Length: 367
Image (tube, rainbow, N blue to C red):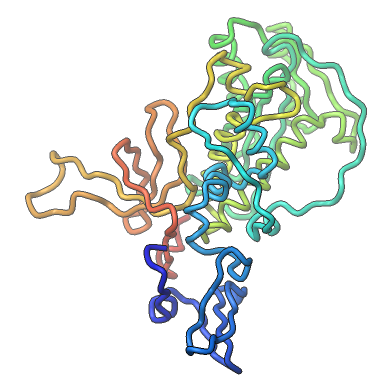
């Protein structure tokens, strides 16, 4: 918040509902959820105490480092962030102090049943000794690019994860070949074991021929026993939990799920994990301590600089967009313009992390 006075008129313009009744003021968001409620003081003012918990989710959270990095890290748990900060696994993360408030987007996106105890399994000693894989989907709503599935590969040694998006399951073999060539080139190791469930795409003859040609052992789970492929199953659940929270946190249409999934994996590779001691998956894979100073809140408003070569004298120098992730190949940000329906890759970006795009019914038809 840029001042200590809230404009009720601006709240109404942005779709909030404001009620004054029985000497009390209540504010609800566009989904009818209570944002703030406060009683009138003796001098006829409505004073909201941010620290008391009267406000469930407002821009003030952006000024608190712990909440800010919780949002930048796509709703990663505060305990994980605290461990992350204390162990100095990345460069640029301040001291994290877990608040005693709940994050509503996390509850909506991540709530699940209590876990079952499982026995520890054998771990790989080198990169690519074991690779876990799974396919997520089909999604009822296609992504911006028309994809309905995503394919993950997880290195057992480092727990680094890679994702590929698919329009059809039949594309899985081509993506596996692409992953194998890239991972072996980067690590200097050969892929030895691929662990998957018994989905048909992993057991077709073309896949089996490829395993034999490259001396890859294919380990399969027992039917209806996903626990045997627990690494991939848990990772997929974590990815989807984060993606749901990210999309809901900034009120994005659901067909941004691929962008949210990609962004979640980008961050999970830079997060602490119990399976790798005192290192992030990125560091365990590459040996380099990742930097995180460039991280921003997924779905926030961003202004991309318009190059001089493509603008006229009196044209705007910035283009208002939505931040939807990171482009690792060009070390830049991925942005989406809902008005032109175009993806923009840019390094010169200004962010308003507290703001989000207010969609019109026409703009929401982005598929």
